[in-house]
Length: 173
Image (tube, rainbow, N blue to C red):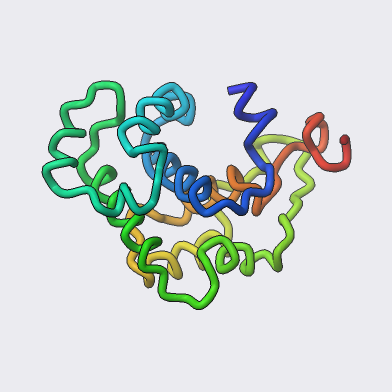
């Protein structure tokens, strides 16, 4: 958890494949702890071909059936199917800009910096996350509720919720 916090969480991410991976991992967190997901991250990377969007998009129902037997990952059929579906949406992205550009436009291309002093101040979701959730769903994404989207925005660095006392807060670097 410390390594994830110090090296990834809240750092602005623009790479589409990495954004896809983070979104997928957030969908698996729904109803579980982030620690559980991180503990299974390597197994997810192997199961989903390092989150290569085209390869995951080409996965068939039989592949999902096979994943359901993989004890090293979170075996929730709807979440597994959502991963394949979401890769297909990204592969056939309808907007003239790529997914990363589209996503970052919601925050004006710059991370939103909240100035929280206590973890109890960090919300579970925001109006922005609700809006992006609706837009993702319009485009065909699955398992992208507002809470999942907010966690994704934090993880991908679109929202920086490092506490003011944290060494990784921009003000402290």
